[in-house]
Image 1 (cartoon, rainbow, N blue to C red):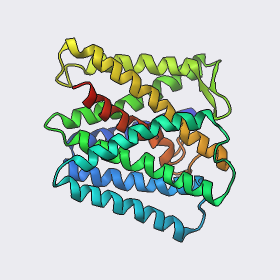
Image 2 (cartoon, one colour):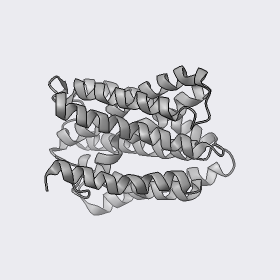
Image 3 (cartoon, rainbow, N blue to C red):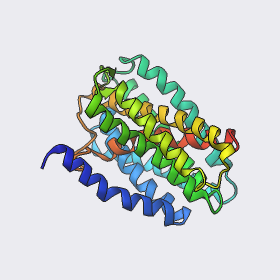
Image 4 (cartoon, one colour):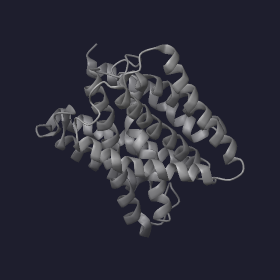
Length: 276
């Protein structure tokens, strides 16, 4: 079976499970399931960061798990913690843009750089988890908004993949991810704009609010690319092709979660700011 077909079949298996989980699971159960996935992704990230021994890696995962547990407990008394960490996450992704610009920053395998990359992993994962919990639990229509946010990352990735394969010539960031092209980005933009128009009534919005939704969707899509590129940068620094070989045709969990890590905090803060 060709790698392209393997990738498509794996996506066809994973997507319905993810959609059902986001749409039908109560927020506490979804938060627990997503926390488990994100922590598994962090295990892969710790290797990209240069942490190779199992005990330090396990302690790193345990520390992030305890942070999520504390935030989950605090959310029962109000959403301030989830909102604050989501905001920190959104600001963090602005700094990531600078990191991408400075390709060689923290590239050397030193203790300080490993620590910095481990901190970066936590700043990617924990705010994304907070943002999803906040968005999903925000009223009866919360699961629809959460699914729409996730779908932006999927649509952008799918549109970029097929447009890039068919038309891709102009490299987007050749030092970081040689396979990505500007033509792929255009394909992703077209896909997410169509998604936003189709989802407007489903999200309970008036057509007069479409402009704000399109703006939010485009900004979110831009940061989905940033999230993808940031994980690719970590792989280039560490010499890995994929974060692992867990998912046929896709690589590891972090290879599937990378864009979502940026999408979720950017989306939920943007949605709140635009009063959607």
